[in-house]
Image (cartoon, rainbow, N blue to C red; front, side):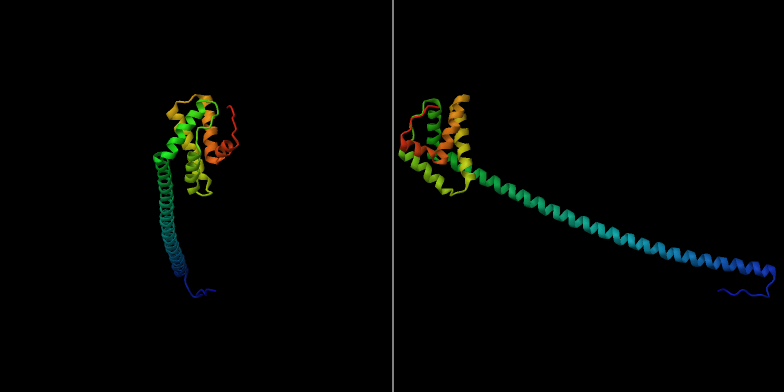
Length: 182
């Protein structure tokens, strides 16, 4: 506890109190300045941390975007390669023409055993992977539809024939000598 002098006059007492208050205010002000400077330093540290986090986030986002774009480019290249291979294949060109013929006529065997064997051997190159088989089926159907200018009924028949060829059902039907109308 602060000890106050007892032998002071009233005027001296007022001056003493004023100095005491001023000293106390200066101490409080100094403490507040220290507190403010500590807060300013903390704020600067937090801003630096936020900046670092934003930079890290941006860098990670750019990596993910690059990875995504790379994957899209790879898939596009694979798709283009498969499409090119299918378009240039004489076997599939013959298959498209036969599918058009099947779609326009009654079901008559128009693939000879050699065609069926060639198509199966090409499809076997893909293995058990179903995606290239679906791509092949779609290619055969779409090409036949565009090349043959097929109407709706003929398109349905062409779709069935493309499914039969790709799934390997056509050679089974040919072996059993099915004569079906579609």
